[in-house]
Length: 341
Image (cartoon, rainbow, N blue to C red; front, side):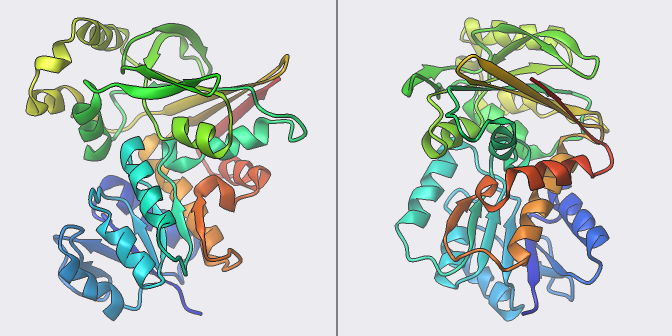
């Protein structure tokens, strides 16, 4: 069966990168870009996530897989994919939106592959946790540490998420109990690999908190983040401590978080504990977070296109064998992985 792939949000930074990597890896793939700015053509079609009438273009182009790389707050595309039996891969949702979308999907009969891939860097962290673990033992604790460079090329989605949510509490997990915390508080000194060194790292919300606790049943899960600038990291912590974010307007918060550079490395590190055994994985993307997020989406897409998955709901790590995912990442130029026991 011929696969026709539609990347909605394909004119954005990550969407363009997904299209480039997919085409480089398989020039024969049929890839279309969906956007509010697109005129219907051989490769571009008009799709507005807020205008379900525009979805007729998806059917007319016989799309078999939708990759969603733009915010769809009302889940119109998800509902359309389920109703029409179209495979669906979503890399965009912050934690509250992911939980809502997952609930919607579970309440409907599913006749396609519905894959949620909205964790950090395209949803690869839970899969890498699995590759670190001794599969004969349960994981007691999982921690994710993120190094974010202000010089990295970034799209609007992550900046808007931080602006909208920085003043709201979110949930981490301690002994399976929900702990309400805020961004940029509860600092912890952490030594990053790849020459970064020791940095103050603060609370940070990513969907992996929910996925690792609720789906993978890890009782203790936390995420901490630091910026490349120690001054910026300290200022954000001070702003949160003084509740300054609470009184700033959304537009003012967007100004704070809305900057983007021309490109830099992205680094994250995973630590898991199984009894007394501690293992650590460090991953560096020399080409930055957009490249790694797009690559992750491509790796998920390639599994979906093999047509070996049953029609049901998945989180993206569930469609891979953990060792295959790690191997695919390691083989990609500019991705460096270190594992320490």
